[in-house]
Length: 100
Length: 318
Image 1: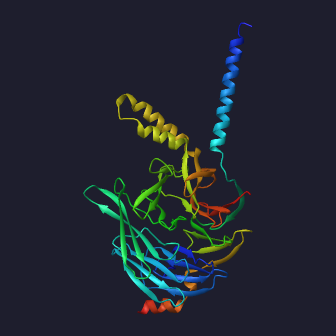
Image 2 (image 1 turned 135 degrees about the vertical axis):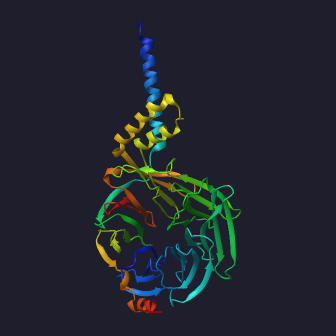
Image 3 (image 1 turned 120 degrees about the vertical axis):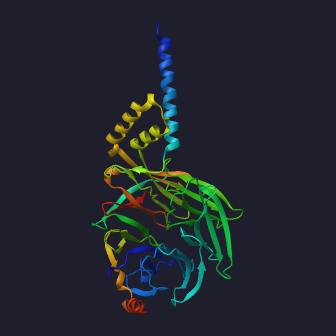
């Protein structure tokens, strides 16, 4: 009975702390949750310097630094769709530019 | 002749074409479905091209900034995608930092730095070209960077749902600004870190202050390189120089180097335009240093490119 006030004080402190903790959780809780979906080994020889999604969100384009390629991946299953080589576009135009 | 380095890429708004800009000055357009080449847009062969490309919202025009950083030639070319003809050649005064069409397609925005040598400060100039008459309007934002750091190239910028609000990152890697065109003002600033670099766990020294971010019309994601070493560094820099504090500062530096591998990367997602933080993803720097970030336009996927060559994709839980 002598230390009843102490018990009350402890209870009050605990209550305040739990309310504060709940308030903090509510304030910092993220509204969106992102879950891991896929890990793609896109450019094994170096860092991935830039990535972008296509407008419909189905394709993912990656550009590596060491290998001079741009690769396009399917987002849904993480498969490589195709790779873009720099000279695959139009060699004739490039040759014309060289001679011009 | 070595193959040219791909510099930048952009999808056409309907998702049918993929344009890739190469270091030899050519923009090559591919079919986005199967990667078949379609067209090459090139003004003249160039060894040191460094620029950016952007499609107009109806997909008919492609704008290319033309920066030769050796002879300091800065221009903007506007191409017609269907025929490959040069529509317009525009003049830029400094190295272009970003390029974008407004959502209604009536304006072309090109950002470039402006230098004030008297105050040793760097500001930002936004050049707005009317896409019908090609009249130029210039907006000056003075002294956004307090001292003359190098300003970067920012491939992704965004107009918010209000076409008068333009979002782009500026400064030495750490800040994302939302600009308002009329009247010209800075509306919002998102800061990724409070000091100008992050500490790399394996490189050990100050890593370049790259800002890794992704932006869509209604969301902005920024990678913050934080954790214990950064806080120790900040504490160390905030202390004044005094002989009594020397030993403490040395011990702080040692603790920093000991804890370097505890560097954390936090991906913060902000909802636009109110700037409320809606999601936070933590990833230790030991799992891979994040070099690039992307958000899918529907906001469903978030992807991060690591220095190990891996790409990690997250999907939004519904």
